[in-house]
Length: 283
Image (cartoon, rainbow, N blue to C red; front, side, top):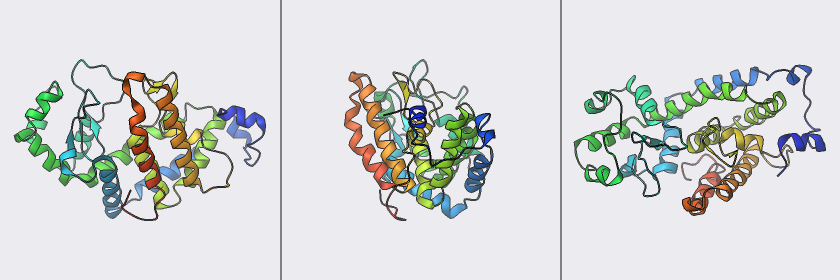
């Protein structure tokens, strides 16, 4: 696949007209428009987003609100499978559970044992310990709290997205930034596109973390948008889904063989195709 600049030099970007200012700095207005769009979401919108994410991440099953996969060296929690990394473990992923707890706790108090952690460290050092405690007080209380705060967790995801997105896009070449904002502005014009952006960010990150790359190639939201086709023969949402499939397939090709990531591609593809379903809670 050609890079963005290769496509530009080949002339396939002829349908876009960039202002003189775009050659010197990213255009800020789209970032503000997207921020405003997310800020205008109301409680019913977040309930809808939370249900969709809960379906995608946990099959709407409460037992997956506190979960430690055999394939991962850390557990994940909540509708967004926010990860909590054991002390001393070095992994190429961003820890999100502590930030989510801090955000949601401002609106609904977390279980006492969680509030009393100092420092805020995972109490279970391995998967066996975690599942020995699965039916005990701490994890039971945590599942109840996570079940009750689904909408707030969705708000946390959206809040993190708008907080980080503009900062990350400012690191791009100005023409890349222009292309990114153009595509994102199109994508969020309907509910499905806005959800796709929020869910994919939660699903695979923004692309800001250099650690979350294989052989120098990332798979976050920014990576997917920059890899989108510049033509408009398909809807922008279909372009986004097609690009995400390509980017995740590339991730699998470049991943360490011992991770056996090909096993996840079918499920990832199903999740992406769910973005195209009209106004449904099904995925």
